[in-house]
Amino acid sequence: MKIVFFGSSNFAIVALSALISKGQEVACVVTQPDRKAGRHLKVSPVPVKLFCEKHNFSLFQPEALASQETRDYLKKINADLFVVVSYGKIIPKRIIELPKIFSLNVHASLLPKYRGASPINRAIMNAEKETGISIIKMNEFMDRGEIILQKAVKISHSDDAQTLADSLAKLAADAIIEAIGLIENKKYTLKKQNEEEATLASKLIKEDGLIDWSKNSKDILNQIRGLIPWPGAYTYFGAKLLKVWKAIYLDFKNDKISSLLKPGEVSDITNEGISVCCKDGTLLIQEIQLASSKRMQAYIFALGHKIKSGDVLG
Image (cartoon, rainbow, N blue to C red; front, side, top):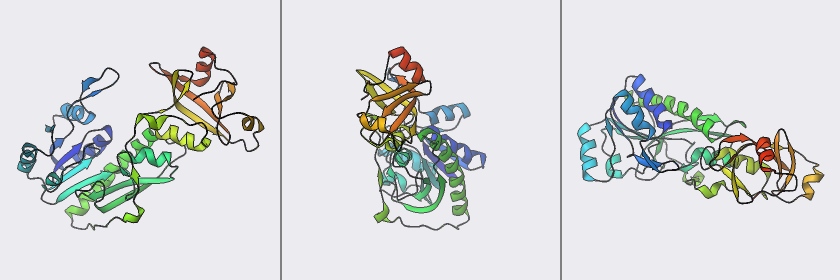
């Protein structure tokens, strides 16, 4: 099959590598233009561009997908399929309809659940026990196309958004290879999504990371896990912003001490970390990061910044 691949992130590279290793003809890779990133807003290429330059693949970085120039360029390739994996922009209908067969999208959820930009993060934040990969035939509506196949995976208590994304990237690579095989052999079926079961995974913003210590400790823990690496869950110690990288829930059903404390109050500091009171118990912060500093053990941070029992975070 002659394929045009759309992708930008590291997640997309795994699928692109799989297509190439399986002998598919990737005639062109479409990725986003170089963009400003990092603290100093330095203009940097997206990961897929770096991958393509390293392996000398044909690369196209359109500024405007809806332009006639972009459409003409892609139409000349005369591809059988467009494959879209973590591209990061909405693709117009006039581009979706160009391939001889159709356009495929790889989405990191079990559609129709978690349509949108942040399905991996939102699944963890909402304490889902399972997620997966959906391969759909694209239409002009975001993540609403007919389903060709799905693959499910369990979400472990030890997973965060980064580790789960790594697992799903491998699953996505397997799924797109299988889906293309079904299309090549004309053995695929198309299943409409159930709109009554649809949910939205809205785009993450920095404010999603602010910890509300009056919430249940398990909800806060899922927030921490779900927002790694960006935007990260965070709290404040005075005027200092503290990013929380790792924590565990302490199941104190008869915790009389925490019941006397207010949310966000530090109940204890040990070499295991900083214990913080929540609505229903205690969360033990194990790794923390001060803005513009390195990650460190919470206990070491507490010693250096003189955090003590009775101090309040938030």
